[in-house]
Length: 225
Image 1 (cartoon, rainbow, N blue to C red):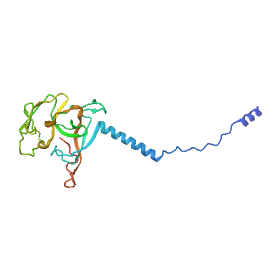
Image 2: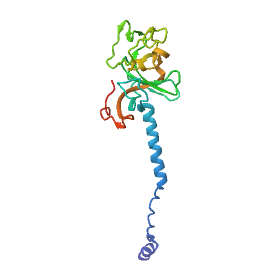
Image 3: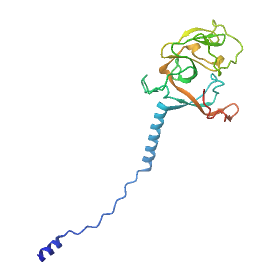
Image 4: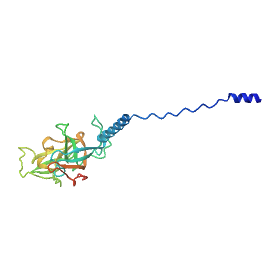
């Protein structure tokens, strides 16, 4: 038994030296940067498509609510986020309302974005008489509207100051600029359909006065109403 034990002992395998642990191969710096950039781009696309998008005001049609050079954010999910390449929307919170300031694709050239205020919603009857706007027979006096031209144009010349009653169709909206005398809007080219609306303008995040070469600090962070 003693010899067996010794044999057993002799046959007991000896522990081989541990192999050095190989350090995990570090990711290449370029790959790490590439992955970070791709993730950031994807997040930006998702945010821009479904949540919020930035716009810049290029004209004075919404003065004095919005000045040329104002940069603003548009809420894209309040009316329902539009599914890319379709006319479908998901998770709408509410429909556009009278008084909302909206950004939409210009009906006559969808490559351009316009910003105006909603005056009439589906079913409303909108009329303009001597610069005054009437909705369903009642004067709609928005506190933000301004008139910078003293003359009144007959409707035979153009509909800026006088427009015959129009009933807003289903899924459509009658919009006008707050700078009533210098806005090209529904008085001229008709209504905006729901599928063309991008979202609700809600806050200014930057403003630059290019004429005076200065920042309009009073506009930054100002809510749009």
